[in-house]
Length: 251
Image (cartoon, rainbow, N blue to C red; front, side, top):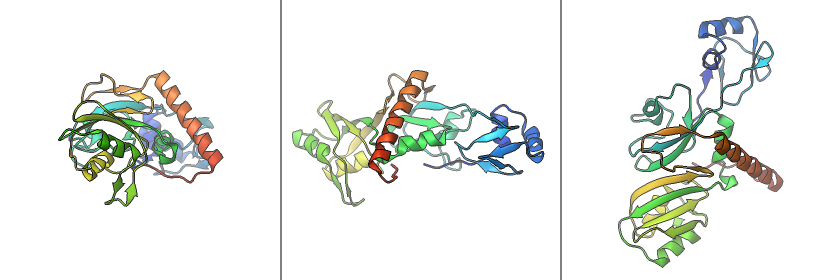
C-alpha cells in the first residue's frame, strides 16, 4: 500500500484549524508540534502522527469508505496513473486505498485516511477474511473445489496458497474466502488448475459487505461497522502479540 505524506499546513487546513497561510504562521510561532517535536515550515506528516496546536491535539476525522470499484479502475493513490481510484472518486478529503483489487476485477475496496487502520487491515498474519464471487470459462467438478480449498502451488510466485473456504455457486461460479492477498491470487490459482477467470467480484472484507452498493458508488462505513472492525483488529493484534509473530503484509 502506498503511503501519502501531507504538508503540515495542508493537514491543519483540512482539519479545519485555519487556512494554510494561518497554519504557516502557527508553525513559525512555534505553536505546532508533531509527535512531540516542534514543527518547522515545510514539515510533512503521515497518517497517525500526533499533531498539537497550543498543546491541544488536532483530530483528523477518521474516514472509512466502502467503494464498489468498476473494472478498469486502478487501485493506487498515485495520481499520475491513468484511471486511478483517487481521481475517479474525487473525494474532498485525502484518502487512499487499503490494499488492491485487480484492474480487471470489480467489487469492494476500502479507502481511508487512517494509516494505522489501513496497515492493521493489511497485516497478513491477522488472517482477515476477504470473500469473492468468481466465474470461470468452463464447468468445474468437486476435484477442482477440493484443490482450491487445500491450497494451490503457484509456481510463478514460488508459494502454495493457504487453505481456504470454497463453495460452488453454479456450474461455472464459486465463492471463495481468502485470508491472504497474493498478487492476482485467484486468477493464478484457477490458471494452475486449467481454468480462466471470466469475472471476479469481491463482496466482503472482514465485516464490511458490498451488499447492494451499485458499481461506481461508495458509502461511509457505519459507526457499527467501524466499531466491529476495530474490535476484530484489536483481537488480532492481541493474538499476534501473544504468539510473538513477525510483521507481514498482504500485497
